[in-house]
Length: 38
Image (tube, rainbow, N blue to C red; front, side, top):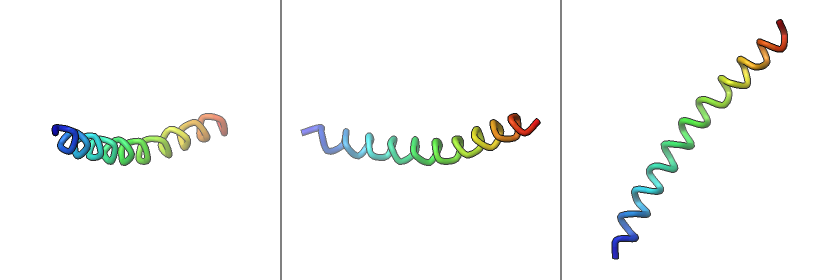
């Protein structure tokens, strides 16, 4: 019976993690590219 609330929490956490990853990964790649250029 607790699965619904659990799924809501999990889905919310997943959304947050996706937002964080999508905002962090480009920065890491950009910094890596800038480091490679030097």
